[in-house]
Picture 1 (cartoon, rainbow, N blue to C red):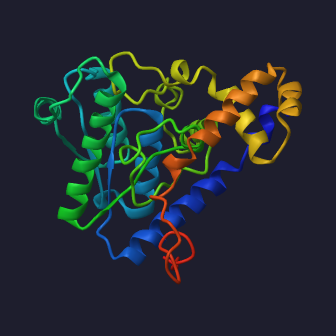
Picture 2: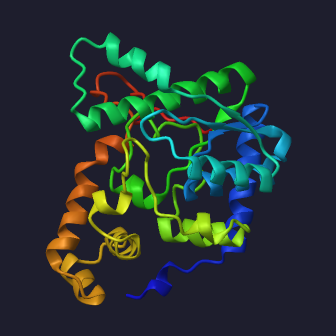
Length: 275
């Protein structure tokens, strides 16, 4: 297995995603989309796709900085993408909102980094959905396949959206699509971070480079045994097993609430309607 297995016709992928966004927004009778624009690769790619699909006048990008993780470089990159694709932006500083949450929760623990970070991700979601409700738009997410399969997102936070146009593309594929869209390499190849605490690095937390992770996930998706994947990629089998275990253990994050089967047809189980 070589990196070439992840190669796609990214011009065709761009066309298919643009068609998907157009059709969904039209069928929803919405007035466009609202999305969070962080200055990172995923949101930059989705912003560009939405602008191409709907026209820049139907896309609103929200910049959502907060005091602890605010970086001027990220803000500048987000604004550069918005300018390149002529997208309207609004900036909402979340610092005071977050402080209100921290002081209002009796059991709040400043030292619990993950719980605190999840509050930030869910606060972003609240703001995005407020704008969507107010403006009759839909929320467009920017999750990719690598992080979704690994459960590397906040449930009901950055994992919450009405559509996720790039969720079936691995991170390395999103980077190539971004370059195909004309996004500068300085942003397309920028290290990924959820920006939930200072100096957070996605690859450091995942413990593996995306170039290797994506190939492991590609193999697991195709039911290739873990020892075969390890041999083909020349990595330790325990690394492949760790990726597989994390993928399986985080399945709950990719599902709606689990419902016991009690009635004739059960929501989310065998009661599904076409969109």
